[in-house]
Image 1 (cartoon, one colour):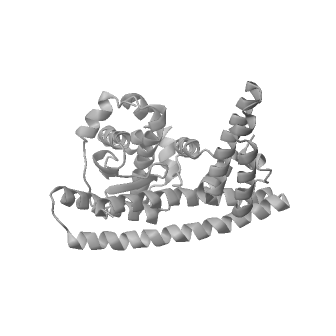
Image 2 (cartoon, chains in turn red, purple; image 1 turned 90 degrees about the vertical axis):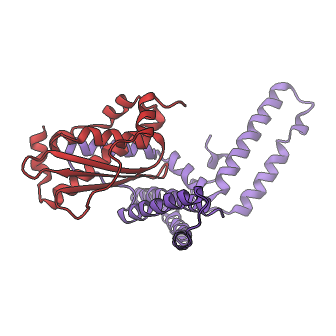
Image 3 (cartoon, each protein chain N blue to C red; image 1 turned 30 degrees about the vertical axis):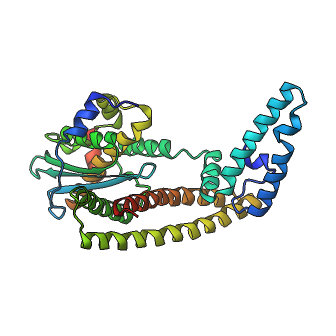
Amino acid sequence: MAYSEKVIDHYNNPRNVGQMDKASSEVGTGLVGAPECGDVMRLQIRVNPETNVIEDAKFKTFGCGSAIASSSLATEWVKGKTIDEALAISNTDIVKELALPPVKIHCSVLAEDAIRAAIGDWKKKNSVAETAAVAVAQ
Amino acid sequence: MDYFSFFDLPRKLTLDIVALEKQFYALSRRLHPDRFASRPVAEQEAALAQSSLLNDAYRTLKDPIARTQYLLTLEGVELEEQSKAATDAARASGEQKKQIVPPELLEEVFELNMQLQEMRAANKMGEDEPELRRDLMTAKDAFDAKMVETQAELEGLWAVWDSGVDAGDETAKGRAKDAMVVLLNKRSYLRNLVRDVNEALGI
């Protein structure tokens, strides 16, 4: 199976690799894993408390090329989005953008899970009710 | 025909391996190509197909993990599909998806991967990092021990499943099934980690 050019590009030049201060109230951290392949993915966001806009995002992924590309793309996409906009990103969008083959769909699922987990962590820290945010998103 | 019915076994997980082996050898002899040498081609081919099914069935059933995975597949468990479905449901409801891997294990896996990356980098430079090596050895021992624990836990769940089968108790079966999925997921993480650590340490 050949990787698409976009996957290779993200794999060779991953965007936003790194970490942020987990303890900061502005930072949300999502740590997720896919046991089928042993991948682990950590995605972090820094949210502006005034505007709810994600101003920065970092990731670190141990896994295959598709998992790295999916999380790299996810950090690019969430940057500049509000929390609610970021929640609307779905794994299908990632699959399309990276032209992932069926066997690698779980990598995109993992990336979506990571975004949602990071946002969930941020909401918990800032006591934002889950349901209220959903109402806005719909 | 599924592998359990091939050996005329109920779909239970605690298995008499010695009896299975005996049955395997008896059937192997009965299906041996030499016995069909003078038979019509159609019969030869049928025996060959049966013999290959026999081998697959035996290989799968004698291995505790393969047997459990096989049973779960027969019972309609599709790990990847379930994960995707759970993500879709989380997106639709706005609730957090429940991760199938316990968060503490993920933390450990992540940390260990960081150390492994360091160790590999050091290996590449031809340097030794005695402290890192020691840390990794400790982690490896801990994960090895966890693998052993998982095995014992799995056998406990087999018992729950088997008595559920005997009693026709669907609730107990469902409970055992879910718990086995979680356990096997945990196990595949541990197995990969132990493999990666061994590789980085060159053992």
